[in-house]
Image (tube, rainbow, N blue to C red; front, side):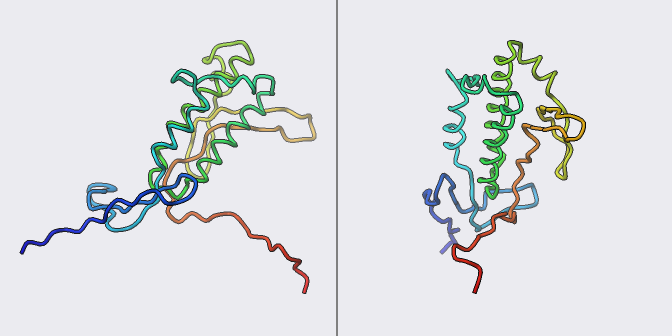
Length: 186
């Protein structure tokens, strides 16, 4: 009797808030010499990327957000960065975190169009005005940066969009500390 390899049935999405888990099969290869076999992994569902990009799009293309036009450039960039950082941190344990690069691109174009609409100029002028390179522990990234000078005694306010790596970090530490509800006194 020939041996038949056992492949577990696909697991339906059962984790909360859009995370899915599925077994890595024998066909999943990290490279030509590494494979992940028989372990469970978290992934970003394809539907999440599509549905979350819709709020930054109109007629299938990235569009400006009119509700942000009256804000300062600093607050617009800070708002987009906060939204993007929250999504990336939520899905940080997913092995296909790189799928969020489409969302980053849609958000970046929407942000640039919002700033261009605010300043009544072209998107290219916005890129020339705000594009810089940012270096951190993970590498060098092209970012959109807004600086607000606050005088001689204070450091400037800096808001950046981008600079967050979309690499799978399997053993990332969750930076939440649980504070007790009761008093710490005995």
